[in-house]
Amino acid sequence: MSKPMGKKKVKTAKRDAALIARYLAHRDYSSVHIPTEQNEQVKEYIRMRQDHKLALKKIKQQILAFCLRYNYRYDTTKSHWTQAHLT
Image (cartoon, rainbow, N blue to C red; front, top):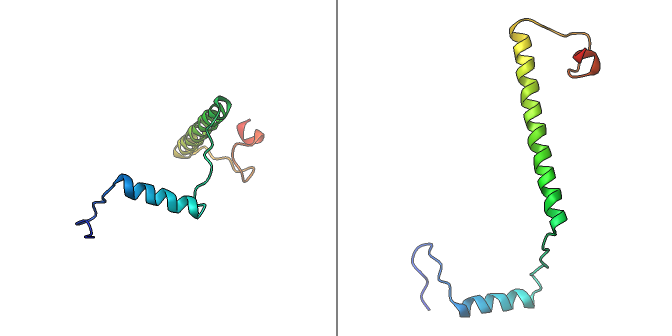
């Protein structure tokens, strides 16, 4: 049996069946989880929350840069965005 030229892989039903049989014999396959509608909603909420947190972080960085540019400094506490800093 000759090897295919280059990186091109040859796919045939016979090879696929042998590969699947090998995986089944060694129990290499894992079960597949089909997400429910609720799972999809949770994933969408998490993505939205991460996007909003990133946007808030960028806005805070822009505000701090603006304040530094015009020499507005807050040195009372070490951390920014505390209640004292916001006041």
